[in-house]
Length: 159
Figure 1 (spheres, rainbow, N blue to C red):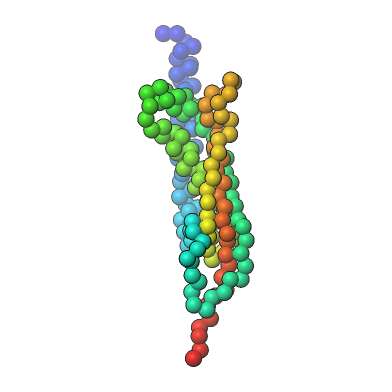
Figure 2: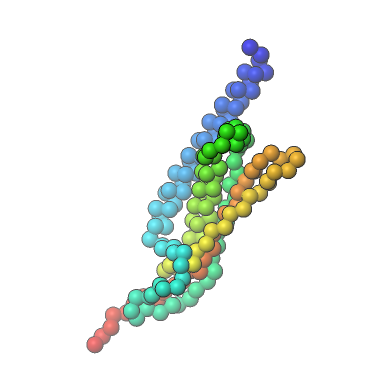
């Protein structure tokens, strides 16, 4: 066997393993931070939401969060093989999932102690698309934005 081929395969395995470990750590971090912000509701609508009786809006502000996540070379290589035969490209699905979740978390952090984030939207775009010297998707950017609303506490009605 050729030593260059053995080195190539070894580097591919090491790179794929390192990328997979980093991705797993990011997913664990996302889950931990999502659990910490679980009590802050985010809704994709803004019409039809009614405040509790007696509550008043204190303030509202646009909040946003963005994240750029890159796919590693080794997963890109394996995805290019999938493009030959068709089907789901799991490496790109997890890339989009990580970017969206990270952007939503960053938006929630910017909202601070808001009572609710209304009208949330998530936009995605690719960075480093197909060009002569850049083969395939390099990174994806996700931007989450919405209106953070702070509501004054409802005071009990005295009758």
